[in-house]
Length: 143
Image 1 (cartoon, rainbow, N blue to C red):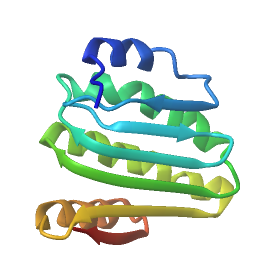
Image 2 (cartoon, rainbow, N blue to C red):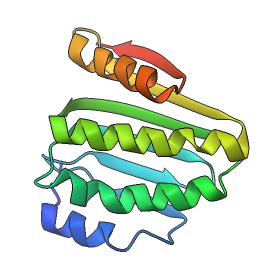
Image 3 (cartoon, rainbow, N blue to C red):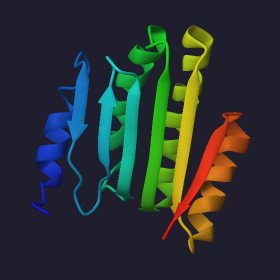
């Protein structure tokens, strides 16, 4: 995989607010993120341990807040984390809270949580997020 630098990712994130489609490439410390306003599709995949998770996730949360005000009639979100540190977990919880608010405006929200079949911690993280936020998750394991 051709690695993108953390600095270039942060520069790219600074400019996503009004974009219809956002594609942030993964690094060794940050997940791939796809945000598609037009189709109501979002994906978070990979490792999440950025130098500053609050700074990394802030523009994503801003984009999601704007999306939640006028969402697609059908929103489908996929999470497939290999690893996330504690601060990233807090940020992902906040992301899920924002995504959950989409239901007030669109009525149709699907959240899929993928975890490796032997990764109980990641499965439990998804269960905790679902429980705390009140969001309904579909859980899928993969080898």
